[in-house]
Image (cartoon, rainbow over all chains, first blue to last red; front, side, top):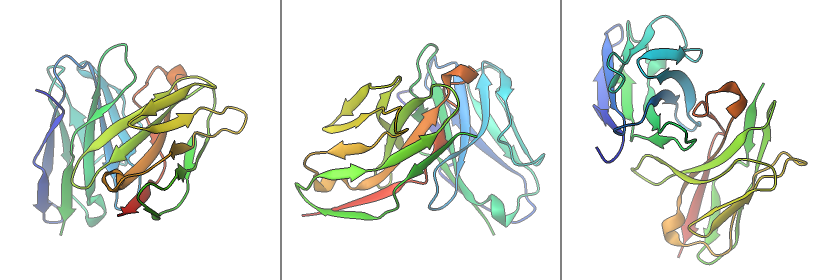
Length: 113
Length: 115
């Protein structure tokens, strides 16, 4: 596609439920990143994929958060037993091999009620 | 650890005024520096970048110079327009980590330009 696509754009879920957020990166971009942006703050790094493997998951806040990228393209961020504190905008970005410019999607706004 | 500090907003200016948004950083090694912009209702977009000391990034009339001696990357524009109203984020990445997209962002500065 022309840009990074994230679905859904908005997600409201009840506390304790499981959610999946999807990211479709720019075609041909090998590196994929997930960030979380709380209200009034800058994005914070969660996890990085180079190809299919998670090369750096040091930003995941706890073991309720997990992400996969099974075929080296689309990625899914999974959150178990959601908490109200998980409410934020979740951003995905991709980078072309050999470049440093990250292209961001419009994000998924997650609200846990 | 690495960090980015931006001036607090909101910054309110009249059209055609001069803009400066301050950004300073703390980093080990030699980071690349970026300004991203988030227009209302849109995603983050790269505005400009600089990869080494004394480099000047520029785009759409905006400029920022990588100053290693003052660890700064201030954003400037000579004459702002209403359409420049947005949230601006300064960010750094440490290419020495082998992970160029692992960005550390400032908290963002909201710019409001009035006609």
